[in-house]
Length: 70
Image 1 (spheres, rainbow, N blue to C red):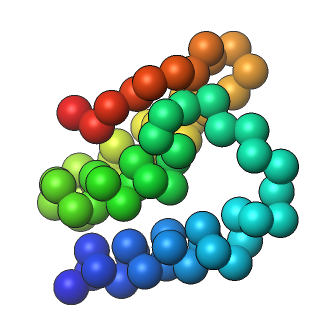
Image 2 (image 1 turned 180 degrees about the vertical axis):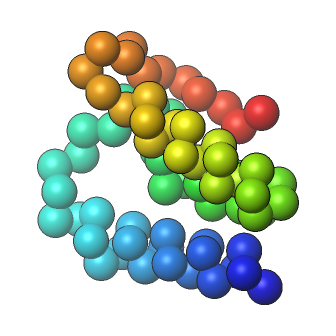
């Protein structure tokens, strides 16, 4: 249930907030897509851990690229 609410919030972000920013994602899939995948595949605590870890990797010194969900 809580996973569904968080997925809804991420999708809301994708539709309403994300379009106002210049697309500069370093990773494939994007962090929001990665978070949705994590919430669908793992329990909420591990999914949020993975999403946070992924967002913290988003900085100029990281090459980015393909970063699949474990």
